[in-house]
Length: 402
Ligand code: PLP
Image 1 (cartoon, rainbow, N blue to C red):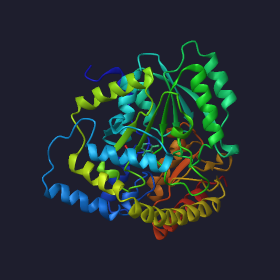
Image 2: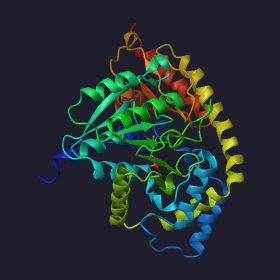
Image 3: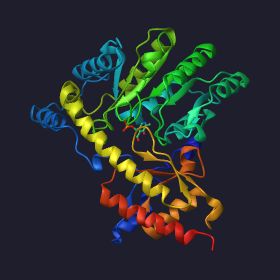
Image 4: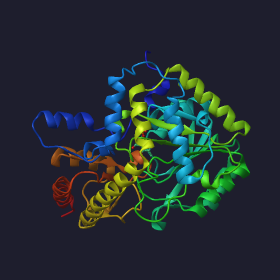
């Protein structure tokens, strides 16, 4: 057998229907893709990023950078965390990666042996799960409560971890969350940190949407996890509208034994793949340096995102079988589907039929660990969103029980 046993776990539910979508496009159908959270399809990155990328290319910065990443970039990230979260972190404790996507791989490859577990909250960003399975691990799930704005029941989480014979290797927080757009408040984060401390579990906080919050103040794990081992994942993809740059980073601010071990192992993994795109790193450094430009950019970007998510929330709730509250952050809606009124009975079938019959691509909730939902990306312009929701609405009408 050529393929490894665990390769069977490798798939990305967000892109699962891409082949069908491409085929439809080739046949001349106007496919509206509301499946990927890619702001660069509808917005442009800050000007300084674009200019610095061209400059780096003209200056022929085509060499391998250090495996940790270009120092200027790591310095700018450290400054950003000082500015925004008052975090003191040495730039050498920051590792540049090819997106958080690569860090997910570093994380599991570094920590997971067969039958090890990791705590994941449901719903979750899909790639974390197949990656964990690939390395022989298994999830210990804790549900976010939809009725309570997708908040976490920390007492329940504590009980679950207590019941485990072998303690989980890490606990993953995705905050703000994809797909729900919910934000964990400071008190919840403090409770999670207490749990991590009590059970000696490493904390991983994916904060890629930290600057895309519409409502309330965002608290980073670095503001509450002092003295507890943790790593933050963040990157250029969302708030710098630069998904295709493929740049993410991991920050290890603490110096305890676990942080030290994991940091060093990440450095080893980084050295195996030599480095990230060098000109891109200079571009991201320049964009981070231009903090005033970024503030103005973010304000405009958020205003526009807010308009689109408000419109999408309204149009979703006009469809009888869908129900959703406007999220506090990011650019996703994760409505619950009332299947009792529909002929089609599960979310996977539903999204496939929607794509085939109406040429609108969304993602099934099952892929995020929450069947009975669908995820809709709200980044498209007003006209495209209106057209997409018109088609979704027609689809649901046709699928209603007569
Ligand atoms: N983490 C979360 C929560 C995401 O939603 C995404 C992309 O949608 C990623 C990570 C991927 O990030 P990157 O582009 O840095 O690989």
